[in-house]
Length: 246
Image 1 (spheres, rainbow, N blue to C red):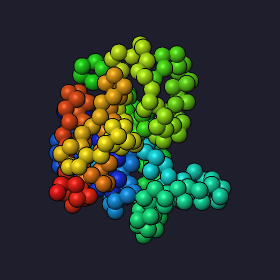
Image 2 (cartoon, rainbow, N blue to C red):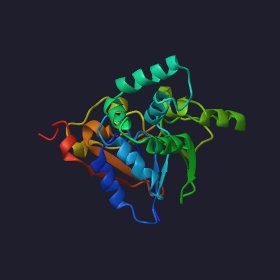
Image 3 (cartoon, rainbow, N blue to C red):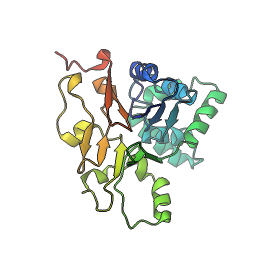
Image 4 (cartoon, helix red, strand yellow):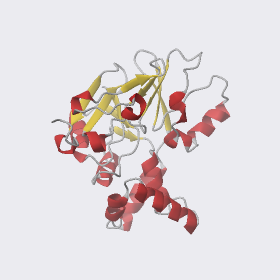
C-alpha cells in the first residue's frame, strides 16, 4: 500500500482520471481540497471522490465557498450573498450553473460530504516523520495547547490563510513537515514556468513545508506526492497548458 496526496485539481477531469487510474486498489489518497471551480468538471470529480474508498478529502476554500453560497451554513441572506459573490469572482460561475441542474438529493449528498470534511490531518510516515496535511498550510508552535490546536483545526485560516508562507521554521519540530496546496507554487517562487515539464512542487521553510499546488487549471499539471518516500509523480493535460509549450 502507498499513501499519496494531491491538491487543487480545480475541475481538471483528465488529471483526476489519470491519478485515479494510477492508484492501486490498496492505495490511499489524501486530497487537500479545491476539487471544484475554474475548470468545468469539479463537481464530477467531487462526486467520484465521494464514492472512491481510497480517497480522503480535506476541506478547501472553494468547497467552503460553495457550502456557504448555497446556504449550507444557514447564514442570513446578506451573508449568503457575500458567499455567492465570492464564489462567482473566484471561478465558480460554471460550477454554480451545473449545481442548479442537480437534483436536491444529489445536492444534499455533496453538502453532507463537504460538511464532514476534515481540515487538518496528521500522518506519521514509514520514516517516522510527522506530516500535517491541510489545504492552506500553517506554521506550528511548540507552545500551543491542545485547545489552540483544536482552534486551528476549526479556524478558517487552515483552508484560507497564506500569511504563514513567510514564516521561519520554528525550533523543536525537526521531524515535522507541512504539506499543503492553496497557494500556487509560482506565487512562492516568483516565476511562472514556460513549459509543463518545468512545473514542480516546492520545498521551502528549511525544507519543512511542501507546496503541491501546481495551478492545474492553467498549467494542466498535477502532482501526486508519496508521503512515505517523498517521491513525486506528475500528470499532464496538454489541452490546458496555456500555449506554454511552444
